[in-house]
Structures are given as structure tokens and as C-alpha cells.
Length: 184
Image (cartoon, rainbow, N blue to C red):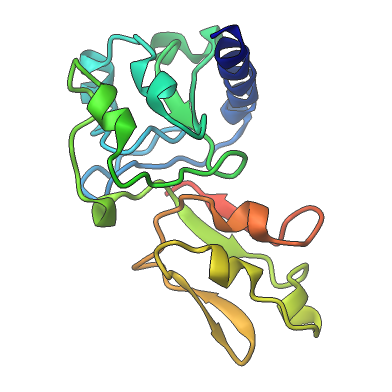
């Protein structure tokens, strides 16, 4: 149990750098409200989420991939509430959505996997192997929703399909990553 808590604390610490980023991200296609962090799937507009969330941490504990952390004390009213950084720790889009199932207060509302929107992947063509000559396609195979295809051996992201889960990021063989997740 303490290993899990230690992991949660380290994930929480990683979220501290989110406050230096001016970009934001909604968590479902129905709730495009801007915020400086990503919320777990099923979170609605920020004000409603903060009203309903009890900061119990059950959603973070239920995530089998430790993709959900807790915002640090510096987050003001949002401190202690769950958040994600899919650029650093992707959401695996669990079919049974244990994070939503664990949310007894109802701050995370049930939704279809196809309605999850955590962000949008973007390819940096200057560092992507496929744009520099050699074939690659690692990101294509890693995308669980088939949002990345290859056109002339180069990856193309369909923004209508991409949900910003971040599974493509660790699949990229470029040392500093040729893919980043934009918060929308």
C-alpha cells in the first residue's frame, strides 16, 4: 500500500509543473472548459467538478496505470483534486473505466470511450523520424483509437478521432519525443 501512496505522491509532484503552462484541456467532448490541467475522463465543467469532487482520491487509486494524480497544495481551490498529464503518463482508456466507477460522489460522470477528450496529439515534424527520412510508424501502432495513420509513410493525426490519451508519446523512439499532447 505504501508503494502505491509513494507512486501517487510522485505523480502529484509531477503535476506541480502544470502551473507554468498556459494551455488547458477539457476531459470530454461535452465539456470544453479551459483549465491548466487535464481532469480524468468523465469530469464536467471545472466549477461543477470542484463542487462535486470530495478530493477522496478514489479515482486515482482505482487507476490501474497510475495515470491520475492529485494536484498539489499550490493549486488553490483545486488542491487535492485528481488531475492527469497524459504527456507524461498516458491514460489507457480502460474499457470499464475504473476511475469513473470509483467516484462515489459522482464528480466523474459515465461516458462512452468515444466521448473522452483529454487533449490532442501533435507531431513535431522537425524531430519525427518519418519526416526525416527513415520509416517509423511506432505511433500508428500505439494509437488505440486509430487516430494516427500514415500518408506517404508519414504520420497524420485525425483531430476528430484523437482523444489526447498520450499512448503514442512513449511509443515514439525519438529521445525527447516527436509527439506532444496539447491540452484543448
